[in-house]
Image (cartoon, rainbow, N blue to C red; front, side, top):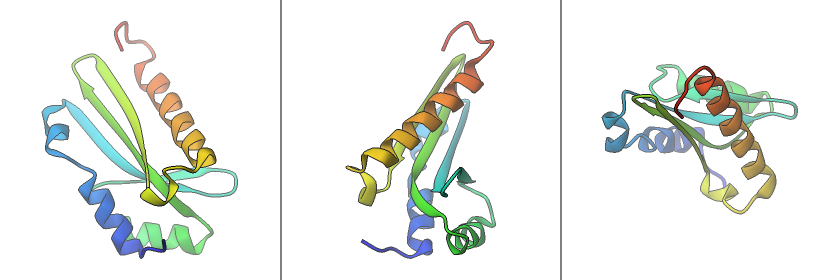
Length: 113
């Protein structure tokens, strides 16, 4: 399934839910995988489409979303693969590793997570 970058940005915008508004802090980002790194584009970034187009032109591939939500001292980080990568084990490994790194970095120093 091939989608346009506009469709992927629309999906990024749709990934933000009413439940996110109930959190103290909530951020959703599109994850773009390159050969040796991943980059993220935040929902709400006014240049998100241009950034995605540039990343794709430079060899990147959109693979999914990372959502970070904080309510009080609790931090939750989840990944959502794009539909075309739902059953792609290497993509899910990358997304899960990103979640672990983000959660560890965001909760270091907190007694409750």
